[in-house]
Image 1 (cartoon, helix red, strand yellow):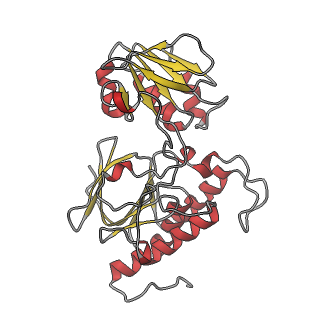
Image 2 (tube, rainbow, N blue to C red):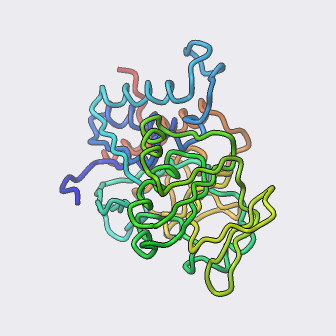
Image 3 (cartoon, rainbow, N blue to C red):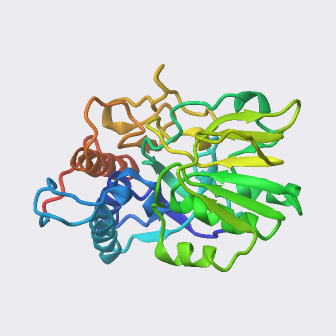
Length: 313
């Protein structure tokens, strides 16, 4: 549990969160960015960035992201690889709880977790949530000691959770819906040392089957269902990632966080920027701009100013 009280806790280390960290740290606000995995976001997955102003053509999304992070760190921002699973917004000091069991406290929160959430349900998923369908291996791995489970996803988070599950389960199927993973090389290398993990590429789940609990998975291109006792879903799509807010913040009918002027949510002291907000066009430069603007409003809120102040110095 963190004993530090931060001025701002930023959830999400993509272009919006990293841009915000540059401005809050430069404004002398004690800043920490909690990011579950830079490879899991839309920018981190991009192979080539050709249209970001001032950046050489051919740079990868991950290179651009690491450059932003390095710039934020140079002004004093901290980064921690943590997956936020819950918030407590009831008091003046806001709290973010992570899957590793840590708590981070902030005078403000800035939510910038993007829109890589799963965009559609799988047949049988809703009926079997809590009965074999899970979204948090850290939370539920101990229930599957010696049993057979599947992890579905192509991000570093999916690989990391499969590795963690392999310490408990007798067998882990890692179902990658495409022909390759978007994950750190070191995590991929660790897979080769886990004999109870079987990687299956181009394997999409078409339905989750079972009566009362998960019994098997139907996979695209496979005639016979894959028998499993549980399935952990880390699939990406285009819906905003706001499940960790626990319904404490107002959202729009389309599932985005609802903010007023100054990027403030329905709870004072909690701000949001980037693709957790509804927008017509999604580009790294647009969400980076929003991260900057939200950060200036965080500074205004904490210092009791009448209006946000531009950072020209």
